[in-house]
Length: 307
Length: 264
Image 1 (tube, rainbow over the protein chains, first blue to last red):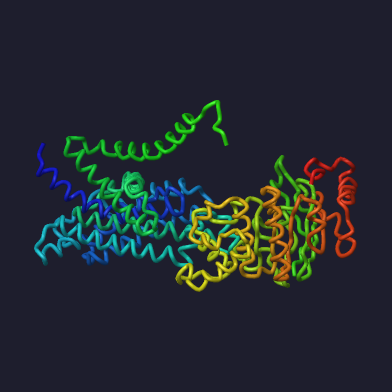
Image 2: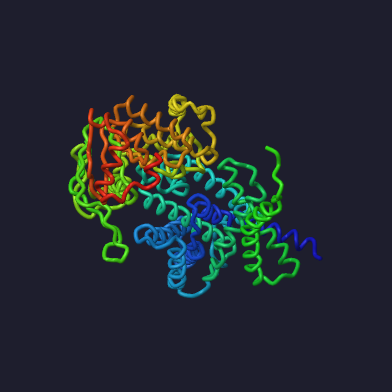
């Protein structure tokens, strides 16, 4: 086994994990706070990447501005799912699938082909590499952490405000918050929009960091997001504050990509990785249920204790 | 205060499950009225509450609060005028949020929500004062998640939240029905106290006929989507459960009086 190879791969995995972690924060909003599984993510992640690539390569747009527009593109995708779900009452899962499938064609239209390389242009990362003369993976990591911290601070603030509280309450008890005067259609739309905005931003960042955008780059993103959240919960589940929960989503993402790098180094086929992700999520969802059933079954005895 | 004029509601229109829930219902409440609502299952009591609150749109008719026509306003806009407590203790509070967060949501009922902080320091002192009235010790547990409270505690909290800022109308939909007798009494006493102290206008659905007679200044009985009996003042105070049962039987052609009614 090549130890230095593994170390190198792990360094890349950490920065990759942080950049994908922005997407995981988006998934956290819908899955954990709003309590819906939003499948738009696969499409909006790729959309962020595609928009970013085309703007930087074809239009010569500044890489930072391209990231902002990638965020905006993701927000629009989220709003489409939101409108289908709230205005037309299509179940959230189905609304997300519809947007995701539609986005595949949209993304192809945006790029005009299935793959756009960013090799000959400056990205946010490469321009800093040029200025400071440090390695690309280190720059990715620093920028990734910086943006992740900013996003966590923003989310922490937002969900503490009156509007943010109403949004959390929507995920908790829709009937209650409607009786208290909140239009839950608006709060859901808002959550889906913000969530997919972050996903789009993450797509843009990953595209600039890996120096290409690909039509399939978002495939399975939702499962990666869920896996990262689950891993984060397992590792940091004891911490109850909202800030630490958000942090655990990013940490979960880093750990996910570390696991991925290790198993790939051990010789696993990259194409099998999606199966592994699914198994991680499925196990994480199955184990608590199975455990509590088993405990209940085991705790039975015909003789009761004395009360 | 509240004026309901000629309101109709039919569920599942045109299907085999068609159910006429409200049939040309008329009701007027004066400010300060505390009206108890009784009636058998399917009489339209809960439908009436839901129509006033805007959970479902009405088919025909008009609902006004303080002269404002709210017939076609969505539920979240009517929340400006209306405080509600539901039958299910789980329904009125957000389980995953803290007691003080729940109260903060209720303090902003019907107001525009902004990007200001969701719970302010000044509010917290006020919440502690209000929670003391409940006498459940919740004022020392303001950061506890509501999901950890018992059904009775949650219902008491919901009541406090519904009246945290004075509603023009308080809707209580069998809000003690899911509680044990002792807790039900506590919540009912509290209801009486809050309504009297603040002189609120309230509609309370109940299956307990003694409570219906004892509480409030007016009693209405519903049957098949209409009000069949409306009594107030001295006449109401002198009612007996047997009088109400007789009324029920009269309305339903003798076959009324289910077990639940007889026992309560």
